[in-house]
Length: 289
Image 1 (cartoon, one colour):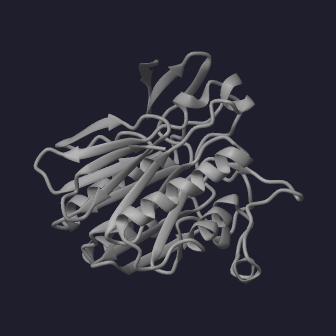
Image 2 (cartoon, helix red, strand yellow):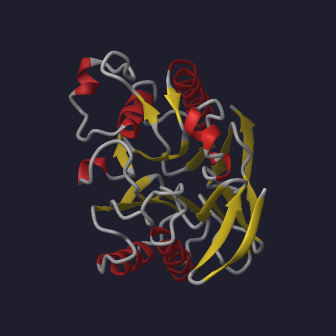
């Protein structure tokens, strides 16, 4: 249970014995809007920016998610904006101008990620979202590979790797099994199958993920309650994901934390769930993993 209390600049929460400023971890945000509104999008991405500074982190971990940020926008299934930076989004002077440029394009689907590095150093190749073959992907959590046991990729796919993150390897593993024109149901089933493979064969903290092809957004909350760190620090309340619906209709958000946006109603996404948001309806349909 989360118990709210006051702290200057943030909202303070206590999750059993785990305490944090719960605005962020690696923060992820997905936006789906039928009738793109540039002003609303700037408001939403500005609210999200604060999460890069007031980050939910385990006790003893430095505050903030300052290891890079990225954003990608789609219209009619095509990428019309993409930017990645290694700077802290909260302090980067390019962030406000970038979201204004993105908003002017009036994208229908947007992904944004603020990184707190766990696997792979601070660099552009390790910065999310990752984009390839018309898909974009971002991840919060860690999949623990070893030299002897890694996510299996073909030799051709191995040559495509640009960074050092577990997240990029998972994304490429998924793309090996998807075509750019795959229908939504096929993408969902393939995504679920890939998650189950990792769940069966690897240790991990969480696979909180966003995936889009520009027509549909898939959001996964998969927290490993058998992982020692997750159990000891009670991090089920740390790896959260929420879906928000605009009461006026036509827009759905998925975010690591709720954002103070007028007319947006939020509800938590349960663990071991995948949420599918189709651009045609912006309705969120939930499936068990």
